[in-house]
Image (cartoon, rainbow, N blue to C red; front, side, top):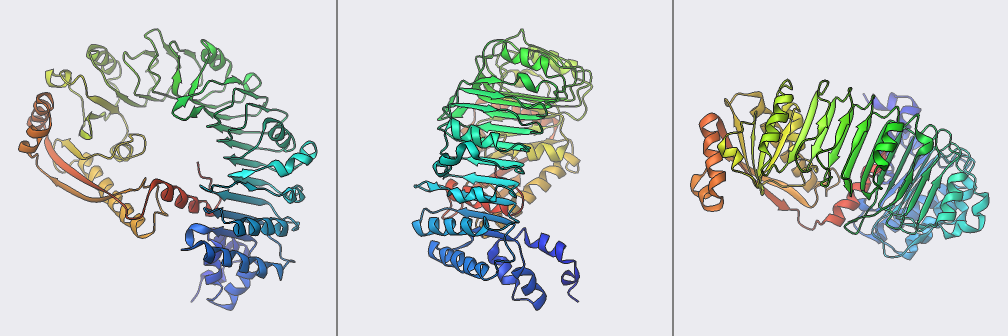
Length: 538
């Protein structure tokens, strides 16, 4: 019995919402029930990455439009176009689709994403006809000059979600667009490089702002009393860009603050943080010229400081309720920080001559349970349960150390994640016995990685951000001392032998292979196919 067909129509429509229109068309051949559902289906997902040739996609796009034109009474509720070629005929079809869907009185969502195209797509002014019903608008690589004539009268009274990436828009037009969205809840501005100044004001229920990679942005002012999450990154062309940020009117509600790749005036950060009385999460990544940080935050629960290498020893962190601390790639010494309520901590650093300071910090946090340690040299890594600061460890001044209180499964997931930015060549897993949960978690992670890699290989990279590489093979066994002594220096060999004396060591070799016909751009395009549902590519 076909139990799925017995489900209510609303649920079946919800299921179809997660499929591209191409697959919906195929499903319509299953039965009369599915044929009727697909014809009344209110979502159009047109994804070029699912087609072998632009002309095939163009024909399908046109045929689908003609079919819809014969059923205008049904309308379209959601239009999602993901295109990765700048074929002029495709651009004309996009215009026709927009003119068609904006005539519908039920249009709520429009996502138009053009990836790695060489010519700008000019969004037609007809998009404004849907202003009374639209709740979600997401644009990628579009030009908005066609809206300039109506800039002062733009009005999207129900728009809640606005995302713009690589959009050719100036300060005035964007300011008027934002002013015309009084019910905005989420705002994302990414890689909009014409912007020099951005003011977000009069948005009483705005919860989240994300402004990243806008290379010419020099001034950002936010007046949003309900703002809970603010994310900013000034990274551009390999440099941290300065930007004057004003969040004075967001003091009472802000819970999450993330700042990266920028230069801040001396004292700005600590003055602002003191005023954010509800702040629970703070992330600082590559903040240049940040030499002193004195944080006093009674509600702060999670703190991440990464690549802030100018921070000096006078830094103080007064956060009595701090539960999680990530301290990645900063210079030692460890600064004054509340540790009484600390439950989870991760550190990644190169200690140099500061082992005595590291020893002191480990003593202060000795109550933390299940400490994991990784010692990294180039693309080789030793992983174990604990760190003993013996002479062999102290001699490795050029190594990097990772220390964490994550559980074993999370620890291995972290080591293979984008956070480490490394495809390990060799790993040594040191455990007291071969049946330990630590070793079991490692084997489970590697097995899962191999399955995911093979799945990505045969599914054209649609399931994961592989970066062009996949895990082809893993070999485990004992240490090959002849190879080690040939490739590594004496200090590393001495440490490895010391660990072999204390633990059972599993030596692991990883073989990474670039997928045929795959490069970083192709994988990036494929990732857009994951936006079929309500997801948003970050």
